Length: 122
Picture 1 (spheres, rainbow, N blue to C red):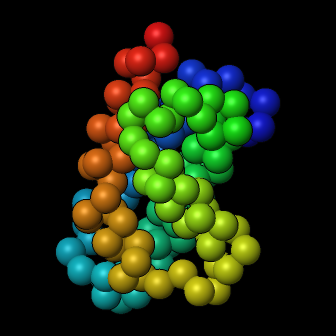
Picture 2: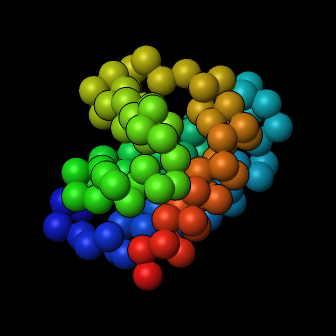
């Protein structure tokens, strides 16, 4: 993903958000992720997409930090990048409740910020 350009990274993030939203539709509580194999598959798939989003944002941050800062402060983006580090290096520590909260409480805000980023990068 390191060689992708800004617009490809934004498109990847948007596609990932759409996939996460679709996969999350059947989840009502964090326990649904752990209830059966289908839930665990959803948890794994969503986690991988969240990791990919973090990686894409990390790459954008390296190249276009000023552009990111036009949409949200550095702390916002830093939290996403740090979450990516957990997915990458501490996968065993991933908690279904945390994934649930990201999907339920934070994904829509990220989607809005990525749309704003796309709009200002044209």
